[in-house]
Amino acid sequence: MNFGETIKKIRTDKNLTQTQLSEGILARNHLSQVENNNYVPAYDKFFSLLDRLNVTFEEFLSVQNDQKILFRRKLRSQIGEAASLADTETLNALSLEASTLYEKTDNITYYHSMLICKALIAYNTDLTINNEMIEFVTPIKEYLFSMDNWYLYERLGHNRI
Image 1: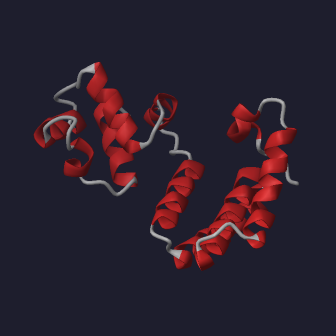
Image 2: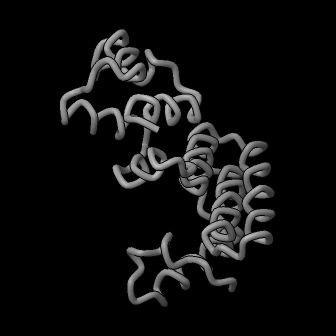
């Protein structure tokens, strides 16, 4: 897969239009030329596009090498969006999805995603930090505090608790 195709794939996987992605970065017709491999944007514009796509350079390279975008990042983005909208129905669905993924993969980050969804649902009930919310967040906090290299959380988080 080449540069432009990779940008287009990530954009369409994230359900963004060319206008949404290009706004404030470059003209929409330039983005079209990028996606058709007729134009290569300047370095700063390229990284602005990646930033808007919420994709690291490493993830871009991974997709360029025909690998999928990390689903956990997409899940995290969906949780953030539902939380900002106080959408408890979507948070509940994402919690179930994360729980299923945890059962299938034993990846602790899915378990934590489920707990975060439940904590956000508890918070949205009365918009205060309550005991139920704290109960959901505590295992995540304890897990992170127990790690010597917590900054590698997503790379190391493959152990079932």
